[in-house]
Image 1 (cartoon, rainbow, N blue to C red):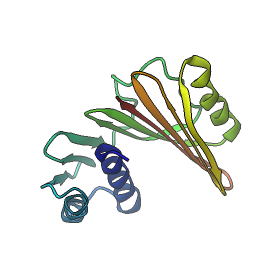
Image 2: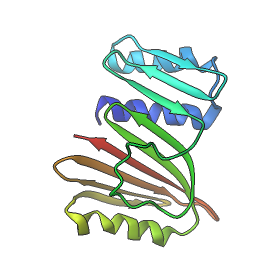
Image 3: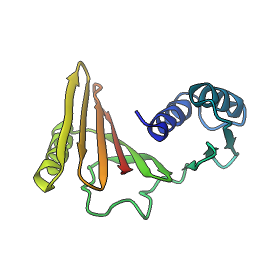
Length: 159
């Protein structure tokens, strides 16, 4: 797992579990500094925006949820509610609330049908994960199932 992917996942879980609050800044900074041995600066403001700077780039998170303008337009989008959008220097992560898991399986099938290599596909209990890549992108799809609504993560990294 590369540095930015780990950073995204940590920031997402911190935000999901506790919300954007300034009291989270030292917790986030300490966790990332221990992981990478580098100084990290986290700034969570009152507008539900967050910037985490790891020295060689930063991750920006904004509560105004929309697909970032520079997200690759050729990628299919699921039917569902976009609940989180994260833009980083080398990629994006979109989180959706969806109701039809079969539509997500169909979305995942788009990638090998369009020149992407399937690197991995797993299904463990209530979680499905797919990883695809081509010469330009690595795409990680994750689906966590629940009784009525499911959480779908769409992570795209530029190689």
